[in-house]
Length: 280
Image 1: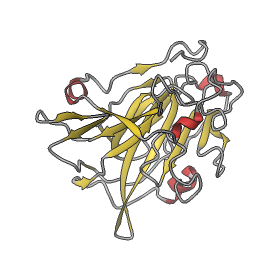
Image 2 (image 1 turned 45 degrees about the vertical axis):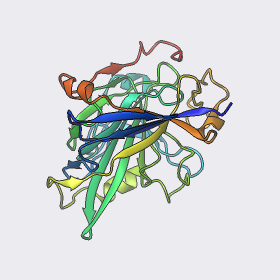
Image 3 (image 1 turned 180 degrees about the vertical axis):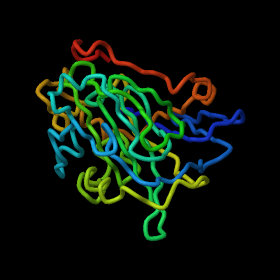
């Protein structure tokens, strides 16, 4: 039987008139606004101890076809970084903020609008393996705002921040989407350093809604070749589930729950950093 993959449809402006209708194996979500708006970026900072990540270093960099981001750890060793703050690199909207399990753990993806040479462009920043998420999906965030804390993906890896920047807005947490090279990804540090100061910050910039493929509990993805940090996932198979299947499940954010979140976010937290891999 054809494997099913979860399709995440994340409209970013929520209203009481949102409605979801079921058609066969597809669920379509309609909203009052197809294009939410947010402040454009007035510049970008590094995701740990901004603006310059003092006290941190990159333990691993970007490699096309392999490790598609950067790993940030503290100068005193990865174990000392557990629970340290992670920050939004620039103004934007949270398009994903949840525990993805598999090789990811807690993930926050922020969609940023930025203007350069009078051209409006967009990029997604991804922060993964977090211990705690303190923002919610659909929330606008500002440059330097805390979005979570450094974790270890439920004990799978030594504590560190895995950080990516996507040119291709369809990637999300699905590395099989896109070209797995600089056509679909930015070199994060190089991009940030080249865009420290921008003419931005104005309201009303339309943000494309996000549509991401996510793993299901029945078909969890295993990404050890992308996230090998000393410990291995208990899932040795399953990466083929990226591509298989002609049927999709659609998961839409509950606008009532998203709006009713108190404080700065939903405060997802992994189990103790001493725990083993989270059972799905």
